[in-house]
Length: 493
Image 1 (cartoon, one colour):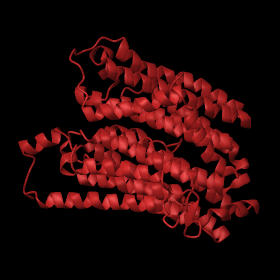
Image 2 (image 1 turned 90 degrees about the vertical axis):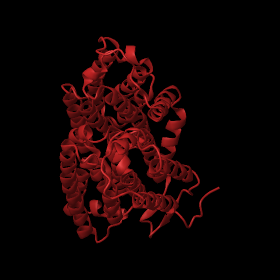
Image 3 (image 1 turned 180 degrees about the vertical axis):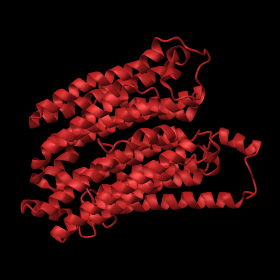
Image 4 (image 1 turned 90 degrees about the horizontal axis):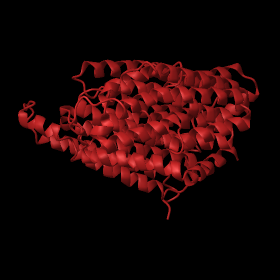
């Protein structure tokens, strides 16, 4: 079974319908409330029980339904004269966006803050709209459509960062995120204007001819695009928004923010620099390798002194972006395939770690690393889950992250990037230090409290899903590797 070949937009239309349904449910629900109502004891009590009903459940089941829909989509269709394509890369990316969003929504259904009860529809509407932007971006093969998709993805992210607006730190982080995001968008548009001015077209197919002619405007445009996209994926030196944003925003949202927008940025990089540039990409390999190396160094070294675990994982995520850039720098079917595999492994490992952080933070009212003292004695399963996620992020055999790094390194070796692989391997050992600091707190340090950490059932389910992903990909990576290889092979035909 497949969707009608004339409906390559079926996934996007389904997401749009879900966004409208969530918004309407919120409006109808608000219509029945007293506008003069304040945070009474009853309303606060409802908030503390979480927003695990209504719009939250509607969003979760809607995202799962659209995820299933992607498996019935016909691959190889296109509309708008090839500007929007439904190829293997697009479907792979859309499944990742939807899966990560569903895990995040599942983890947020038990959020206790008043805002998540009062404005649940706004929060979930923003998530669905952002996923819609990512979905369009994954299929975009034209510069204007690519930019519009980026903005549709990004604007809700600014809103969700400052969603807990009564907390000053959240508003400050949202403002920083917005200002830097706006500047990056301006850089992207500026780069696109050079490409259009030099080639007379916004189609990606026009880029190779402009580069082949040695047109400096096209080259400058591609440099500016790389800088703008560097912000989206939090690569050095465009990474400074990440630690403040991660620390201030709600943790289930950060779990998704740390994965999905970065994956969208890498899809855009693949479209522009692999499919768009073709063989001209070979001249850019040294620059991409240098960007990967400095990003790995910066992320790992900056993570070492952190004492807030969300900031630690923010810098850890920057380092992982560097490892993923190694796959892009390899510029081969194997390199892109292993980059895609890495994104899936990173999704399970990083989101799982952030969901454990949410659980501990609720219990201890702290995001400090010291809050994890004696966690193994208080909640053995929760500590074990965190340890597995950290080992995966650190690249220890045999969990998902180990294969991700190994395969990316192997692809780089095939391209002859031996120095970059050596640097990545050395910094992987450095990364183990700050991951094991957290493990020491959990398994060696004595607990400051004896009562177990309470894990809400829905949050435990989300953590268990991530555990299954990390362990499953680690024990049996072959199906995931084959899937990524099939997608990557179509990009080098």
